[in-house]
Image 1 (tube, rainbow, N blue to C red):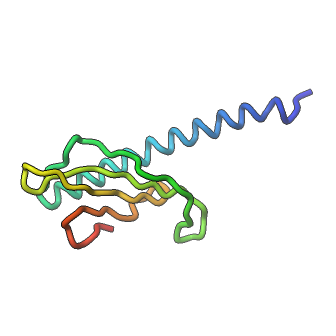
Image 2 (cartoon, one colour):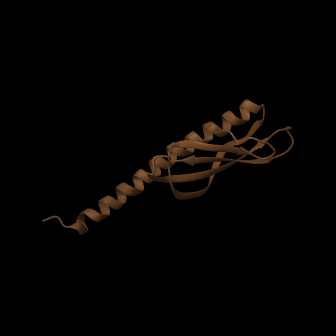
Image 3 (cartoon, rainbow, N blue to C red):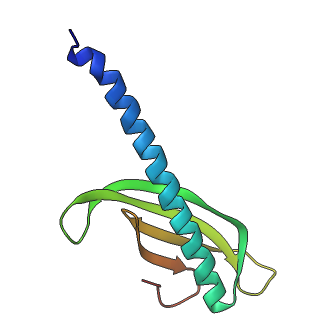
Length: 107
């Protein structure tokens, strides 16, 4: 007879696999958004990568609990400096792209 203790490790493994795949998809979206924001303004996207800064639970516009992820990246506006930027993801959607020294945020 199968008990809860037999199923629990499989559920935990499935949860870890889901989180890993969801994080890969969100990171790819954040990378594309950061690259596009730099290209839109004529800035150089440095290192061609984003790094996870923070992950928390938050509610989306429908009131559902989703993960809010903040990714950081660096760009150059003159070609000889490094400036910070961040991409805020709410679930799988880009909530905001912020770039230091740029007055408006891309939503």
